[in-house]
Image 1 (tube, rainbow, N blue to C red):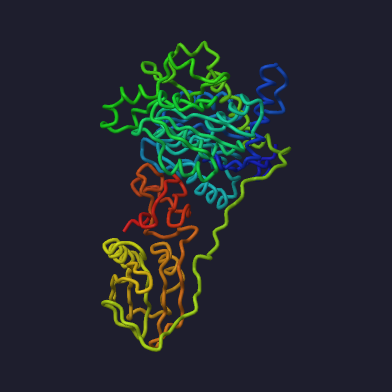
Image 2 (tube, rainbow, N blue to C red):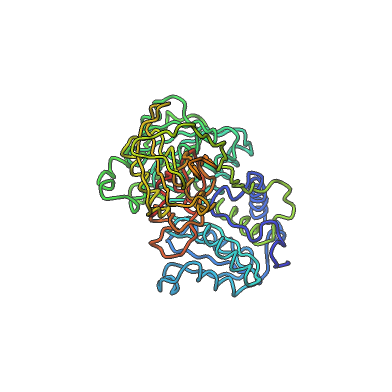
Length: 530
């Protein structure tokens, strides 16, 4: 096998989130999984699936405990006969507080081609390593390493999602036309249900019923993500309430209550919360024929939401689901390890574009008679930032004005005000800066202002006239600014972790952004650290 980068279609790729594989690539993964599962069970030749190359090194780096995921990946890696190294949270590098990037760079440098399977409590680690190690490999003329996310905090668990979707696909006899699924349990902390917002897009028509007590409800941004994808979404607070609703899903996906991730106030209610999402024998007659239950496992041994009396019933789909983890992970390693993919003919993920079309040149309007606004006198030279926070209340706009001044370091002679628009009666803010030469307010500051105050206008004044006017809309991407940071304390990019991660946000709504690494949504005002 050729080791240099790009010798395989999937070499050097990262699977940090479900969307890192296109639908066509997921179909390819599931077709190959079906083939390997059949070949293993029928004792057929497996050599055409196996990497069988000691120049490929597979690292299983689990900095959060997980016996099931780690062992299935270990077995899958052993199947391929690659060099295998297993590291855990007790490894000396991490105990000595060495940075993630430096540790993985050194490991990458020891091999001709490296594939890392990583599980961490921190979110977004694989996305950060993809960037940091790609740059490292390019500088040092090494093949770009591959990364597979084995679970990162409350964020994503894409390989669990792939084995789940394969299982649903198999259950539905390879029919992708529709799925009706109930997600039951701890939907707030459970990353396996969070990934369903993207994973279920594999099916063309999706109905999702969310069953959880209010304290453990699916976070709103995942619900909105599902709705934006065209899913039909309904909410219920208990299994009992759901079964009375009438139209019941034939696929149920249970999750355990993740008490270790909960605050003390929620843990005190654990008995009531468990009762709401635990299946009881009395519910059996209310289920539609052919219903199957699934669970990412393991179950809580004392308080299982899926009681053990269900193990011997036709509802038991979770045992086959667990076995499918081994088969899907064999294929994932085979794809990123360079063995599989040469026969792939579908579409790869679309690389998003981020045009600079958010800065719009507007024809300047100069009134014959200068218009005085409350507290503001027209200036002869300088810049004026207008329409700040239009439509907000006065207090919010004042806070917005001070934020703009701090972030752009506008500590100079100026005036500012909040007033009511004569045309719309809406409140808006203005900052007048006569001491700033309009020629010195360069493009980088303009882009930063657009991210701080989308919807504002920027006026360049010379000799009492507006010589240039810009309307600043919400940018598609905000990056390369020292003043931005993710507010999620568990995100790899949060400054508390000292990884020197290059923070980046992508627009996800009119005035909202998501973090590149943990995908937490932020209001545009909240991405700034000062």
